[in-house]
Length: 80
Image (cartoon, rainbow, N blue to C red; front, top):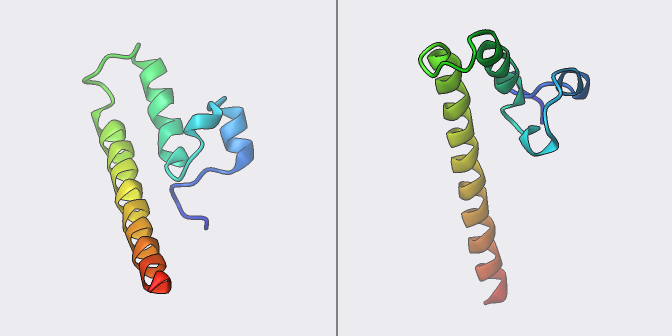
């Protein structure tokens, strides 16, 4: 499942992303980290990048929870 928000393994390795952050939103995290380093981690400097990354994280969470509830409903039907 590749999309525009998933960076390749080579891009993630080059950006030195920790393994825990290599998820569905990794392509948005790379420019956010670059911006943070360039602006000395000033919180008001990279607002757009941070908002895009957090929105991606939220949408991914909602997608995973919806999938989980569908699996639970299917498992409950199979148990009957």
